[in-house]
Image (cartoon, rainbow, N blue to C red):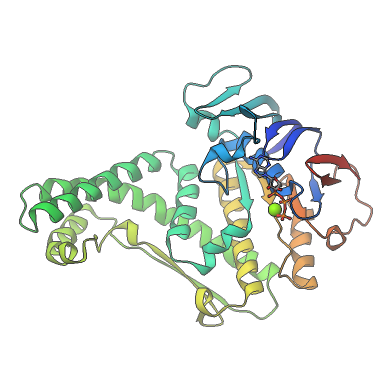
Length: 366
Ligand SMILES: Nc1ncnc2c1ncn2[C@@H]1O[C@H](COP(=O)(O)OP(=O)(O)OP(=O)(O)O)[C@@H](O)[C@H]1O
Ligand SMILES: [Mg+2]
């Protein structure tokens, strides 16, 4: 059984330009329209914040607090299959506090992984049009659901990687402490690379049908996962020790999962360098749909889907294909747009869909 996760009864206070919003979203599709600068992205950001205590666009969380206010806070009732819970996340200039059913959870991570949310926002285009770092982050998000210990393995690996680099930089390729750091790198790196590889297999498996369903008919997508290291500890150690001189010259480790890559080719050419804007956008959306499906299967729950400004750059047929997906998915969806006419409602019920309008931070149901 895959549980349905839904936000209901949401209150947002002093969050960017949203002074106070109380609303009861539809369990299905929520279309939030408004002109530029009215607070659409901020509302999605508030939902993301109450789910995972982070922002998808701000490096500095402080920017979420409404100017002149001390705290931003978001409270939501979350229905999770048969169960319901109350989540509250509050952000001050120096601290972040969360409550689950009125109680402080043992760890922030316990809170932040309870309500899975997948978000698409314009910055996500870097999944397709920038270097591999963003694609690796996507794999790591999925890996965390497949194997929660992969996060610790990644941190331990990164620590050992840095220590080896310092040893190489300071004492050179014959430094004695290199061997134990390389052993640590290999042990943690293999654990972490296993979770990455599993995430990549699942992601790319789900990506192909998602792309086919939304992209222009006839476009060929070819994907390839190229691991930067090995799944075998002895081989990993051997590679690291044989590359000391080169790594010392380049001042970077040339082997290991920090060099994992996902290649995306459309019609035989690199999507990053050759695909059109609209094609890159559809591929990014397809990656998001694939992420949603991977997390759904690992977590046995339908993540909430937050889509910011999806339709710009898409032609009417592509927008229609995305919209068809949104209507059919079992996830609760929040989609923002400056052009609500792109999302027509042929006879949807109140459960299936609600239409909202944002004007200067105030939300009203249409
Ligand atoms: N901390 C803050 N305090 C008060 N207002 C803020 C804060 N941060 C951002 N704003 C303002 O909130 C408004 C809404 O921003 P938001 O990005 O949510 O708009 P939007 O509706 O998504 O617009 P667009 O269609 O252009 O993407 C902007 O005018 C912005 O300047
Ligand atoms: Mg916006």
